[in-house]
Image (cartoon, rainbow, N blue to C red; front, side, top):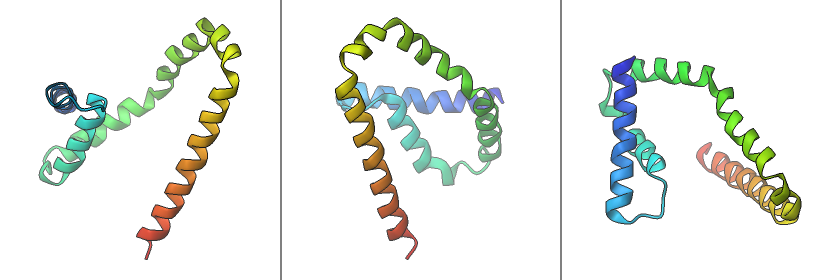
Length: 110
């Protein structure tokens, strides 16, 4: 499992390096995950290990909501001040995601 974690972190580091050196306006972990997605077929001997690691990480997924909850509590005054634009952004993002997802599903199912 440690080797799979090291590989996952190596892809994250590669993504961070590429975004930093290339000046890309994307988060490094997102670029690293895209690179992992591209490299996935050539990582046949690592796939099972990475799947096991992902299962372990997802079993503790709820812990990732603790910092977000603390942030909400600490910055409640900002949420009260900016509730309108935040609500609009959440609704627009949700509707946009649903529309693009439905369109993509329709297109790929043909």
